[in-house]
Image (spheres, rainbow, N blue to C red):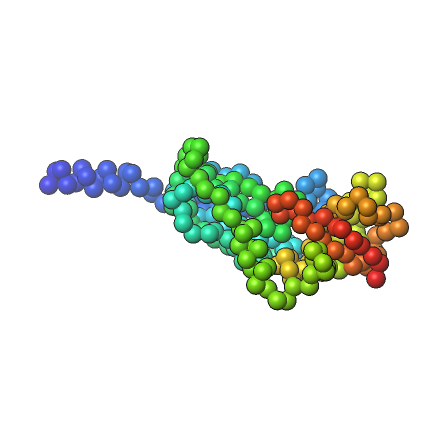
Length: 223
Ligand SMILES: [Cu+2]
């Protein structure tokens, strides 16, 4: 009897008294140096704790886990958070290091890390290949509008730096990429002349894949 009580007491002690709940905000702040970010973007929690990702304004974000402990089989991803208050909650049970990004803002460096208990050691995590998944979806999507090897899109100019070949656009939804309306900074190919573009111009442009999940503008014209 005494031994049984002792065992029960040990089991209770080994289990956390309660699971904690955390919130990570999905923030867009056009005045900030980094315009799209998770806050906080680094978080340490304990197994059994829950994290809620919450959009704090009407700018779209989508959470995707890109690396996680090998023991976690599922793909952890939120639906597209289109508006303020949209949220996604996940309970972390497997210890280790989890890395995530916002899919639409990946190229803009919107990412973060959650450590559950202790960080994973080398070789204890695996990458989740959302890009492969996205390509598969793209291949089977007949609603895409491709011109040549590029992806056709439209939008409005927010700002231009012709010298640096960058242009900030508020683009319309781009179905081929599963992108909602977003304001994004794009780099163009060097052959594209941006010197005649200014704020407010309505434009059509073509995106070409450039590396991992980045896109450059290969052609642009005013509408
Ligand atoms: Cu985002």
